[in-house]
Length: 161
Image (cartoon, rainbow, N blue to C red; front, side, top):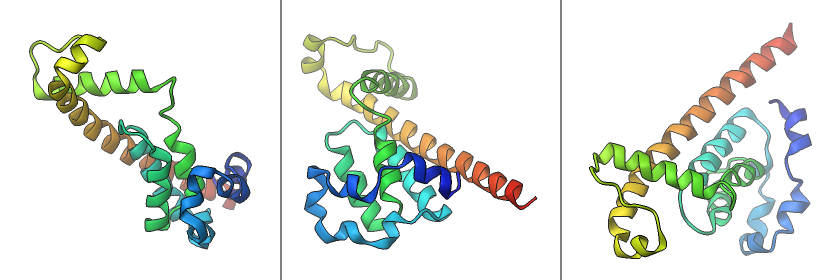
């Protein structure tokens, strides 16, 4: 996971800085720390990117950019990973989180997903969805960081041999 491989897959400074939606951050996008490929900065970016990716909300890319700047973690990683949830994967992710929330809250008769029932039962749906989201986001973010950290350390050790 070391730097050379990451440089191949990550978007360049220019590509990210040219994103219209990120222009609001102005000169903050020039902070050296948010472009660093150190293990600590990358793992922080992975945590934030994966955590936010599973939260049902608009403008996830803006949120991860802001968090990357605040916490000085790798910005390209956060942006790349937040796209785990995209228009194709969102329905599956959110349905899983809703069902997980129902399981945790011990909901006896889960609400059937349809446009009619969603408006009528938005509070019950939201509670189950956000309980499932909290669990999914937290577990997957920590798991991703844990696995990546192990792989990174193994890769560095193998290169030393």
